[in-house]
Image (cartoon, rainbow, N blue to C red; front, side):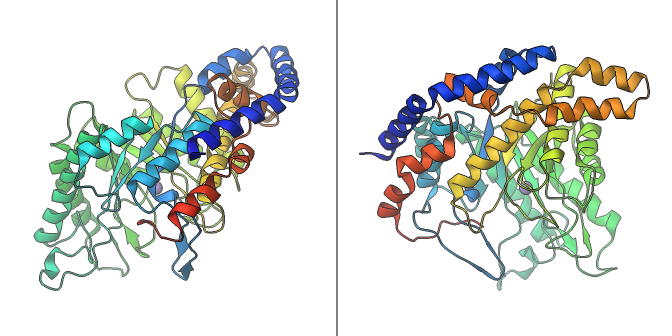
Length: 432
Ligand SMILES: [Mn+2]
């Protein structure tokens, strides 16, 4: 039996066996929400339109600088990565998009890759340019990214980084993508190493050259991060720097929020609200963290923070703030112990649940509490929604689109991993 047939079979079996329990759960939550004046059908309809991109680099096991443990059946090339995304999409009906990373996913045959994407029912989401992993260039040290890429004081390194990004835009365009995500490792380890203002100027100047080549309909996302790999200063270190860069480039430059790219206790939902306010929220890299850029499963550590972020999105959508550009939703995680597909399924489920919960907030109650300066009332409105078990709404949205009621158990039931492990063995994909 093919892997696709295995998945279909497991999805069907599960839908049959769990139909009665699901129907009862759905009726229960629908009744509860009706009492709050919330229409469950509106939520199901909205959930069924959400699309969460899977990063190509999250389909193999991640690792740390202390080592990496390969798992059986990891994808060996870009086609096998796309096959895994298609499997995830079959289960969830919410992940029909892949985010590529160049050069990890470099191809000499963009036409063939585009055809394979189309055949697999997967679209090419925002594409990432990597200007942080070139190693040394013994014959051309001034073109190395060792001391930065677009912010480097040496012209050769900046030109090389700009050329790479322009090439990534061209490749992305050939594949049907509409956005370039720029995360820079540029920064310093030592006070005084470079001029903060000079580095910002050079960064804006370089990125302007990339921005000028963006095809129609494209966006450029700037992704901030406070530290790592630079441990004293990063050039694009927070949402303020990211917004400065985006504003300097033009209206199609927007800021991308990676949840793990903040100092501990940063109020990320407020950062999201500020970027919405400025019309510059480009998209998200969803993950979760305890200490730093931990890249853990979305919603596994701070589900309330995820809910509060989604509430800002629901609020912004209600106010028409996304008329010009709706943020791209992407997962950016790395898992050292879990099956990578199961991790993506869990992250997707967490985002859908948080989004559904955010939609169940009694908006009138919250508005009244704010108008009356009633913080306890505001908390009640939010936490009443956060504590509502909305999983049946998420399952119903998936059921109507032909997906699995419970993606992880259907995935396990299908034997997909064992089947691909038999073919792929223990080979490591490129990437993290
Ligand atoms: Mn990221």
